[in-house]
Amino acid sequence: MKKTIGLILAAIAAFACLTFTACGKKAEGVIRVNEVTHSIFYAPFYIADNLGYFKDEGITIELTNGGGSDVTMAALTSNSADIGLLGPETVVNVISNGKADYPVIFGQLTKRDGSFLVGKTEQPDFKWSDLTGKHILAGRKGGSPAMNLQYAIEKNGLNIADDLNFDMGVAFNLVAPTFMNDANNVYDYCTMFEPTATDCVKQGKGFIVAAVGDEAGECPFTCFAANKSYLDKNSALVEKFLKAVVKAYDYIVSNPADKVAEALLPSFDSVTKLQCVDVIDSYIRIDAWMSTPVMKEAAFNRLQDIMINAGELAADKKVAFGKAVDNSWAEKVTK
Image (cartoon, rainbow, N blue to C red; front, side, top):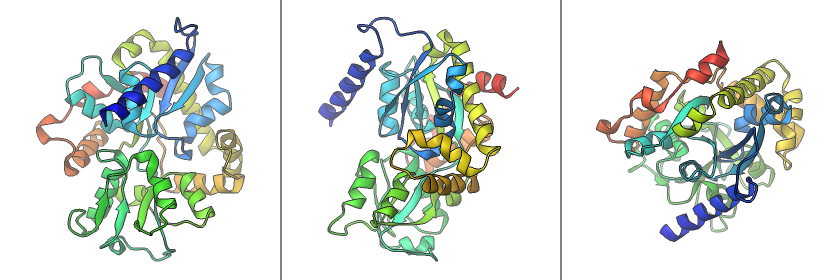
């Protein structure tokens, strides 16, 4: 495990070196963003790039994919990325472990789980009690998808320890391929983000039966975070970054889904326009995106309660809102 983590970090560092001139000074206006996964769930971010909103602010985005919030956080803490698009639970974990130059949340992008529960059989009348006795690929232990899925299941009277096989032994970025290539039918359900969930259905390897965010409810799910040192040195650039994202959100809610899909498709080669429209409609229906990047303290505290419920945070290790979140840039953009 240590060797694998070391190789991942080495790869991230090597890639980061390419964004510099001979590993020297980074070009002005370049922001290295590492995303937890590549999903239509993060539509405002991609649209801001595709429609030139970042460019209008003098920003060039260099995007890499972490394949999990833990790896994205590693990219941040090793300075291989400037901004992380990741689950806020990882920020809580790093701060509670006492790191000095810790990442700070400066903007919230999504307000609920954006994954979909995918099963091997079609279930138009799916009930959460149908998960009794089933084997579910839940994602990485301690990750937001697993914790929100647990919350949704237990909200419906089931216990993940006693009533089903809640499998957190597969890395986040390997959950979908593991489920889709399950020749021996070991797994009954898993969670997938879009466009992976739609692709799974298209290949005839699964059926979307429920939206986890619908059942789990509102909770800070994905945010933008950066090290304190980066925020201190790049305050104006961070404000411009959020300004572009907010402009993209406004574009989404003020245009029909087919026009929004056209703006998104350059970021998703394997998705058709019709599929993209369906996904956008789904995320609008469950109210997935933040209308403002300002994170609320009550929402942050609910996230920590969910972490405590999942056994991922001790009650006496809760992090103060003002330490983990700095809304000053988001509030300027909102005003």
